Length: 444
Image (cartoon, rainbow, N blue to C red; front, top):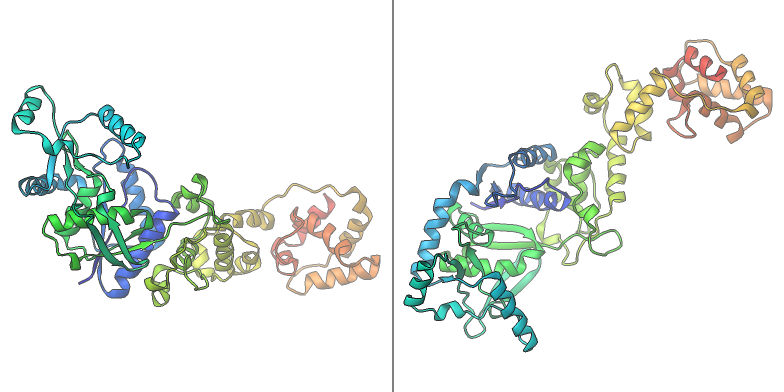
């Protein structure tokens, strides 16, 4: 069975980039009838926080993404230690004692010599006596993985999005997999987890391509079959102008979007279509399943434009049925109110303003130059009951009495009745406001 994983670090809130990867994994897993694992990469104990774990789960559920199983890397430390011991015994993991200062000096020296700043594998020449002496002096080794870089070795695979890929291992420093305090690093723990939990497909960002080459080499050293693990790397998002995504937008959290009133269906619909030729449409993840195809994702970086996402949000709200909107509306709001105001909404929280316009109080807009016209409007204001014919009948009477038409006729009335120069159609809004409020506002 196909098995995928989404593996966020609980060191902050999920942002739009994370959401795109989570959605792609969910869609790919569900389309194939496979499983999705939520893996929390929380071995960075200094930055990982319980509140972020809770937030990740809440945000994913809000998007409509569920998972089949879940675990934390912090619960699997013995498994990583056991895997490290296997690599030590097989000669793939070797101890190092160089300090950061020594490594920095080596890198600088190699650059001056016109050579790439790679680790020189000096630790491999250390004798048993030198190793024992270092331990006696209180030093603790950190452990590097010996990449299969001899003879210009490379790792090749056919990527599920980018096509044929190759990473030349001889151009990469042997990565540190275990720190001196014994704590494992992501490059290592991720491979151990994928191998031991049976992950078959990894869908993640293009920035991991080089890391994939390294991890496949570790996978092979741990006994994994190269044909058993498949990768697909999504090109990274850019901003609306095609430049690097700014920190302001790149860190746009789902939590903030939710607070701002952006609908989950607008986010998932927009993210699912990014980088494809499909026109985006708002929808839950299950709505998006029929049109999802990982092979349709372009090799070029898609542009993330918040304005397009908000346009999709408007489209979603304008088509939302009253029963779906009801849980988000002020108490007492009915279908007539929702249908009157929804076409004027960009975000759901804006509905409160129009509720206040209909049922509450507004700040009067002073129009001293319109006093005579508004007095005529008061005199001609129809008696109740009000319905959809009241507004056109009233304005026709005013037009006949004053000779006004167009903006000169409608704008003073809109400003007086709503306090705004634009908004819902007054043919549907005036019956909700009622004669008493309308009269008071015209007088004010």
